[in-house]
Picture 1 (cartoon, rainbow, N blue to C red):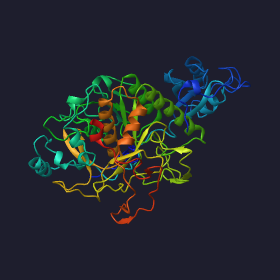
Picture 2 (tube, helix red, strand yellow):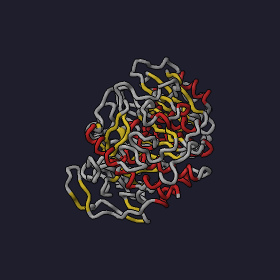
Picture 3 (cartoon, rainbow, N blue to C red):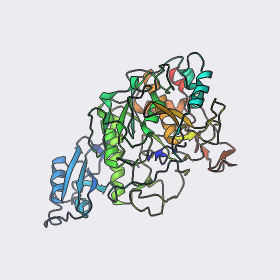
Picture 4 (spheres, rainbow, N blue to C red):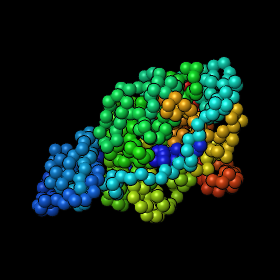
Amino acid sequence: MAHLGSGRRRALAVPVGLALTASLAFLPSVAASAAPLGNTADSATASKPDTTGPKLSYVANLTTYGTVKQAKKAVERAGGTVVTSYEQIGVVVAHSQNPEFAKQLRTQRGLFVSVGATRTAPLQTVQTTEEGTTQQLSAADAAKATAQAQEGQEPLEPNQWDLRTIKADQAHKINDGSRNVTVGVIDTGIDDTHPDLAANFSKEQSANCVGGVADTTEGAWRPYADGSDHGTHVAGTIAAPRNGEGVSGVAPGVKVAAIKVSEPGTSLFFTEAVVCGFMFAAEKGIEVTNNSYYVDPWLFNCKTDDDQKALVEAIGRASKYAERKGVLNVASAGNSNQDLAADSLTDNTSPDDATPVPRTIDPKVCLDLPTQLPGVVTVSATGDKGFRSYYSSYGLGVVDVAAPGGDKWQIPATPDANGRVLSTIPGGGYGYKQGTSMAAPHVAGVAALLKSAHPEATPSQIQAMLKGQATKTACPEQIYDRTGTLINATTCASKWGQTGYYGYGVVDALKAVQ
């Protein structure tokens, strides 16, 4: 999970080198005793609101009967300004310097279901949870791979052990995917000028959603000059074309779009940007989204907290809306090596935009977003030997499927013997990363192949096919830990035809096209 996935990013890349409301029709109804819409906060905001605090961003989620027009008036009375609004899902994004802004809006129970700040402090650069930096492919290793490439392979494909793991190389002999299918990479941006991405890039379905408003001007979707290569790497795994150059994607015949949601100078993904990302994908006819990150500043968002509850609600509405519009959302499980089905977990990293305060959480109440949202395909990572990657989070009944994410301790017999995932990076190069961030795009690619073969299939049907066609994988006896030591795999639970490490199994690209 950019964060990138907790490695997802921070991207959920470990680079080396609820039941949420399905629609407004099901939002909580207004209690008979509630005050009239738009009037409940009059007494609380009679005096001029304080505007001396830090400028923060907020999401305000409307009730069934609340309107954006009413919300705008309430926001202004509380000392805020509306940045954007989504009438389709009843979500308003606002800015305010009033420290009591959210509290004042929450008093209007007839208008708002929940209101919360999307961050805890003015933005600052933070440490990422990636394990090291991207390892660029050397000229010598590229030459080794090219020398061993067989007829029909891309020059660097011999180093793509991950494609062979999910039988994507065999799938390509049958079908590369349809140009009518687009995968939206909600991430740090994509370098669409890369020669191994340009042919499959969809500018018409790309944007910069940072701040909550989609910017579709030329190049707005590209990574920042000093930014992360994460989104470009993810894009190559999904849809690098078979063009006689570099690598191949899992679905080299489909299109890929960039929806940039990371803050400048960081790999932080805030709620307003992610909501924009899902809504943009929904309205632009994108069929699959890849989400290799978790939403900042909370690794887990607790529905018992007023602010965090609002973030869960807003993102949940947006992802569900996208699903209703035909979008299948795929997300990485995270790189924290945690059991997301446990009774309790320790969160030492939240909030990550200020000083973290360690806390114990219940992952059934405190959700990792977006991976734990209903309808989202949750993906764990494996290495070349088929073991769960040492960093990958897991959880029986939480993880849906698994895919190659790389593991530096599981070394394949490729020309360069690198256990990480090779893909595109900005500037026309190639590099290795590992993380659940790298696993999710393999699943997004297989989902794109399925959508290509079954254009009328709904997101839930595509998800069912992903699970049903996955290669069943039993709990292993041992796995590698973070130090490269083999340990007993005592944390792998199995039930209902699933395991906590692999869900329904490792995705299969060949079955997707047969």
